[in-house]
Image 1: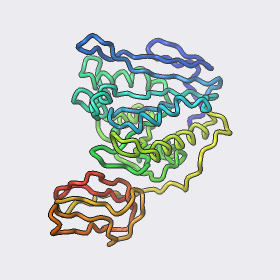
Image 2: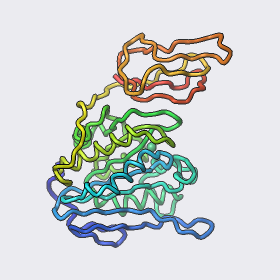
Image 3: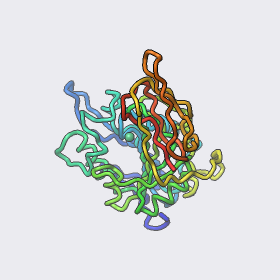
Length: 320
Ligand SMILES: [Zn+2]
């Protein structure tokens, strides 16, 4: 896999050429604020001495998913991850506007529903367009980092495209606690890359606007496993071992059967048994206390952390 037709002999981003053994920071101008301030997206290119695969590591496609930005930042500053073979292109924060607004979106639009984008479209659409035009043509595959939204925390998990055998293999190499095939969403980054024959695996961990050390570390370790697998970094970089990741076949939301204050009694990532009480929903006056029971055997792969729930609100996503 990815062992012929290497693209890193020369990487070209916005007319800048990066040859073997070269590194460069390239800033892609995307917009000007009403104040005249130019907004640029920094792209780091680390091209190794040897020919090899080219990988895109992408954080902050959703601007409020800070774990994704933080884990990319930590890898970026760690000098022990020098690239010897192949090339790594790093986008630490794609959606700068969402980051500043504490929002998933970019000026009210979801970049991850704006692909393939257009040169004259909305800001989100232009960003999607330039990402495909300037970056994706250079890469063999991408790791796209995300978190849960709306105060729902994902336990470290990889999502791959079921009909893409290479994405499945990459998720095996990444080896984070959970993995599963996930349908392509129209106009998403993963969908557009799939159309261009570029596998994308999506790492989902933690929740938006909250740092989660476990999520950050698992994201870094998984990425290092991939880089090491393709002999891109030193073989002596130490990566803690994980148990083999659990493949989830079915996922379903367990929803609130009553409104009230939700108190989870189980940790994210735990295994559960059918009928086990995994939380309670109480009214505010202490008159009722509904137990929340696991409807099947499985694993908690997403946990709602918002304490006030209405009837039908999602509480846990249970994978089996
Ligand atoms: Zn996201």
